[in-house]
Every structure is written in structure tokens, then in C-alpha cells.
Image (cartoon, rainbow, N blue to C red; front, side):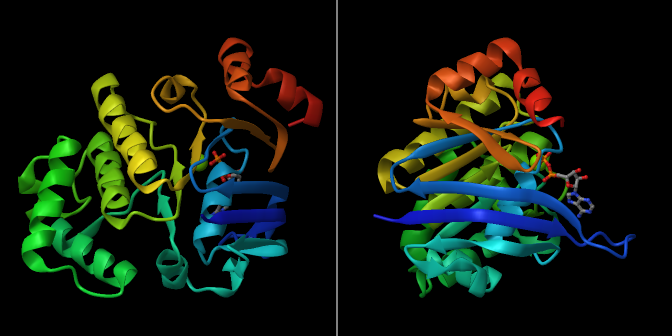
Length: 255
Ligand SMILES: Nc1ncnc2c1ncn2[C@@H]1O[C@H](COP(=O)(O)OP(=O)(O)O)[C@@H](O)[C@H]1O
Ligand SMILES: [Mg+2]
């Protein structure tokens, strides 16, 4: 049983061309426990990715106040790799390309770091094969450089491949649905649901579309506008967003 607890989180971004830091997150409160799926939904530019980067420890995003803990441990005190070893995982909205590092090398290195020991080779090869086949990924991808020349959908599948191999305690999925065609959306969603069933991890599903919620059912839905959660509820809140969009919320905060 794990708990990710975010309290009154304020985050600024250190913009390269500006002398001052720009405040983006303005008091986020959110608790995600094992076995729970939370959807965080908000319009473009509301700060959703900033929230995911702050949890993962991206150096450009400066926490100015508030706290993030995982099972009572101070996440903000941890380096990025310590956060990963502690059981946090981020599937990025824009996965980065790493030329020269093969996918299979990358996956094994990541699994070794997170598990604390190198997985036994024979067992590992089987494990990767099965996970790739579940996600309908061609085995030839193992020899390609990480994300290099991958289509948007292929990148997202590989993020979920990492999720299924690394089995984190809490998974943050930042717009894993964007840019996917219907078939890829189904395959990726099934991968997320498998993770949820097999690992009982907690999921923070960030999105601005409701369509992924036809495949992944959250128990909790949070509306994210202007750098904070402005309303929380159950799946019925997503239905309302599907119907009416974010206008009611953006007008209320003047965003
Ligand atoms: N590295 C950055 N430099 C400058 N501005 C940024 C940076 N990252 C985010 N922002 C700004 O912060 C706001 C929120 O961005 P983001 O968290 O990506 O929103 P979302 O993921 O909800 O679309 C936007 O106005 C964006 O331009
Ligand atoms: Mg984003």
C-alpha cells in the first residue's frame, strides 16, 4: 500500500529568457493511493505537465512551497533517480529521443537501477518479449535507439512498455493518449489497465480529452485550471466535461 501526497504545491518555472521565475502551480492538493486511478483534466497551458515534472524532479521546475511525500518520505529531498527507485514513474507527454542508446539496453539499465540488481538475462528476455507482444510492439524495436524516429504513437507505446517492466508504485501518465489513433489508444489503455490489475499501483492520468476515459475508468476526476485543482468528483465530472468543456471552470477562475 503506497500513498503519494501532494500538499499546497506551488511551482515556478525558470524560463531561460526571463530573469524571474514564472509561477505556474498555485496550491495543488492531491492524494493518490495504490489501486486508485485519478484523472487530472484541464485545458492546454493549465499546468498539468508542470505538475508531472515537479513530481518527477525536473530541474527547471522550482518548488517554491508545499510538499510532496511518498509513504511519508519527502520526495522533494530526493534526486530524480532516487524518486524512480522509490517507486515513482513518469510517462512524458513528449518522450525524449536518445540516439546511440538501444531500447533494449535502456530498458535493462532502467530495470537494473529500479530493482537494485540486474534481471537474470534469460528471464529478462522472456519478460521483455511478452511485454512487447502485449503492446503490439515489433521485437525489432529493441535494437533501435530510444525514441529516435519513432512516430508519436510508437513513443507512447514504449512509455507504457517501461511502465509494465518497471512496475512503479505510482505512475504519472502525462497525455499518454494524445496523438494516438483508435487502435493505439486501445492497446495503450489495455497496457495501463494491465499494470493497474497486476501491480495495484496508483495512477495519475493527465489528459485534456475525455476519450481515453472510455478505456481507462478513473474513480476520481479532478478539473485542473489555472495551476490548481478547482473541482474534484467521480466519473460523472468527466461526463460533464465531455458535454460542456472547461468553460464553466475557466470563467470561474478568470483563466
Ligand atoms: N520551461 C518553460 N519555460 C517557460 N514557460 C513554461 C515552461 N514550462 C511551462 N511553461 C508555461 O507554464 C504554463 C503551463 O504549462 P504546462 O504545464 O505545459 O501546461 P499543460 O501541460 O497543462 O498544457 C504554460 O503557460 C507554459 O507556457
Ligand atoms: Mg502538458
